[in-house]
Length: 458
Ligand SMILES: *Cc1c(COP(=O)(O)O)cnc(C)c1O
Image (cartoon, rainbow, N blue to C red):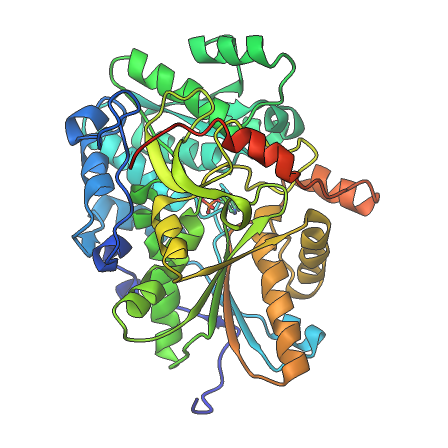
């Protein structure tokens, strides 16, 4: 590369911000498998999806062909309040690691919700408002999605009901208060407010909940209340589409300096930040224009890619949601309550699952104590206190940079720093007090959950 000195932060001007989202599916030869109706086993039609999701989002969910979808002006205006997010050259980390690798990270924690989730929350709230709805329901795990959605709903004056996984509700009371500040109502899940919640509580008394349970409750409430729809913060095709803004900005910033990454790394829970970050890079790879190594990083305690099955499964524990073909640990899998690092969903985005299955990307799993070591190392040199989720990507980026130190290779590494960890200090405390352990599911536990996968011929 020409010796143009790369600044610590590469900025884009307002004119350089993306005006369209990029739909990766348009360039996939093997499209992600369609969502199935759990009753009939047939692909869901737009009519069947419209009681659950807003019309425009149903269209986006089912659109496998349109490569670029214009971002409505109202959403672009909102994006301008906190975007472009910074693309940072991690000079300080490179120096600390004594690596010849060049490390960049795209920091999405620069807004009050503290994560990338606002990118899709604002889009989903916009389409709900445009359709004249009263409000939306959703689930939240660690609370970032619920916070992002409450912010988006208050901006468009929509009601927002959030089912929050009970363990997080108890461990993160401050998250709950942020949501309430933006006017959302927050219920710990599983709860007695829904049929499915009552059923789960009867079967698993004392359960600390899971994203799968909370999804079932939120969907039930949306479909039973006129003027409400359900919104989801990850996994779905539409969410990956909205999150492509991360990758488009990253690529535009790198292109300004003629930088071509060798490796693009992201943490993977349901796959939305990773799908968004890699979108334009994967697009070039799929079209045969360039090659990149693309790496998903997941927790060893919830290892959907690395130990899951590629099969149709429910997205929720209550088994009322559509079936998605994805890498899954089984919808009855609940990660150990001891796991503090987020990324607790049992499945993975169908788009990423298909790409992984077809060999276009790799995945690794990492243990939470090593994730928090990486988080602390990063915080001490780069200044940002990272979210535990994001720190999975930091772990892998550091590991790749150390490999470069050993081999002498000057690779360019780009990773997604999805958010900040100010609400995760109980987990940091456990780490500092030496109370954090690594609980990894046994093959027997996974087999038990795989045995309950629905039987589908697709
Ligand atoms: C939700 C979240 C994730 C994981 O979700 P994905 O859909 O896999 O991106 C990662 N990091 C942060 C900070 C989050 O809030």
